[in-house]
Length: 215
Ligand code: E4P
Image (cartoon, rainbow, N blue to C red; front, side, top):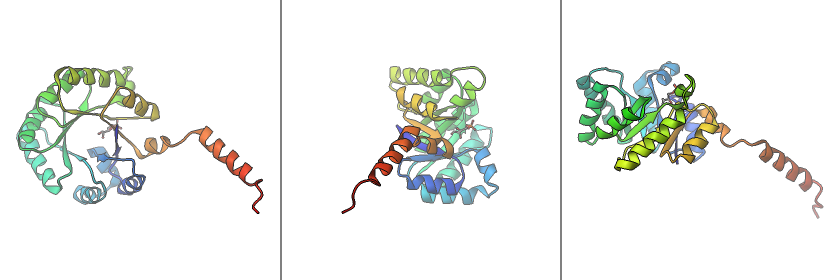
């Protein structure tokens, strides 16, 4: 499973990229707003660090506007993926951008039928938001499994990005149900390394090693 970092914080992206486990990045308007910086500068820096797909989100609402915005974003770098919210207008834009060879990531997805429509419009990626579903009493990962079944049934090539990830168990479930990608915050990615038994094991080895005669 590919791992993406979900942030617009350039320093976090730089550090995580050095860990050699990530394959791409996803941003959204909220992440960019949190940086307090001009989007174009943030995007240029991210694209300079990440050697893989980088999703940059459109913020217009009609298909012609989204298409125009998507074309401009795609000009920034060959790794740009145009992120488009799942609406009727958004999917019309996705179909047009796909026909032009521009990669798309359909976002804010909450139902398997929405995901079916996105695949029919040629979306490169679909982003089901599992954590936001869990927060309102649904099982977010059930959505991922249903999308996976539909895409497998009909041979759609659209890749599933498990998004709105809240903890390592989401990452584990994403991998177990065969999602293509999981995108997560810096904090969740850091937690993937941690296990108390690993810490205790290293501590014991070092303690024992200290008793070994050195000559
Ligand atoms: C994914 O591409 C989104 O940026 C992200 O996961 C949004 O989810 P959240 O704001 O609920 O974390």
